[in-house]
Image 1 (cartoon, rainbow, N blue to C red):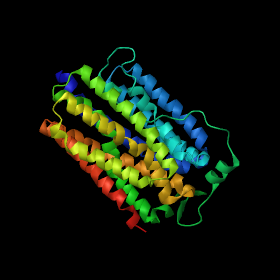
Image 2: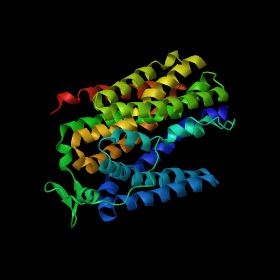
Image 3: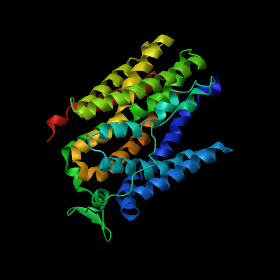
Image 4: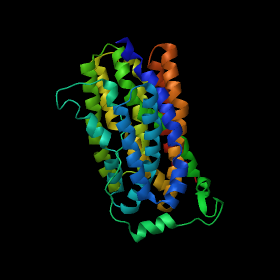
Length: 353
């Protein structure tokens, strides 16, 4: 039990290494996509990620595990995450919300089916980034080629060809959204990592913790497609949906001292499952609304880089608070406050011109 209780803080160290690698997405999207194309990058990234997981299965020590999960998996994510959504943005217009939700649904399906075979593993092993790489894509089209080959005409760094378009940073709405991304990313993605250990500290058994993770996965799966239908119907503005979900999750996380029983953790798991991971499927849509389809590649690379910086700075802080205080309460306060800041920022978007 003592060994299990210190597992999660160590994960924050792993996330730091992963964040440094995924920050390469800025260069992968802008340079790699021009040299190789998005499709080749996705294929290469898929093989690299697969090799990382395969190496993890036979890892003899922590050094090899860091190499496989931090380096190989991070490089794989840098090569796949951005290009996948650039391709999705090319092919889907009317149902873009559904397409993005489906691309992120892998973790939800996995965690909601944990108990099908009646077995129970260590709850931390069910941690997931909620990302599902899209492997099968339609053949290349002239529309995609025109988007990928389109060159900006001013204020760019050039090495024999246009490489990094920095004019997109002149967009004030993008600047505000990057602020939102910095504070929202860790809270949305890391809470699922810390819920098992937080519940164990409050006397919840492993069997019940597994049920909590299953509840989160089921609620997340339901909410993704429900909100995708709402966003595609355009009845509610996308940034309103995202801001509402961030705010609800942030407030629920700030109330963590009240979660001392299994029933209380069920309530928190339902809230997080319904609203906590919506940021990942909605952020691409809100980003597209900020910069337009023609600038999505450059803006997406910047957003993913901000995500990496957020992990580098906030993830170790979350673990440090737990190690210093001996409780996850402060860690959840930090993540919750970041989500609330993100919610306030996204609701301020109409004020920015």
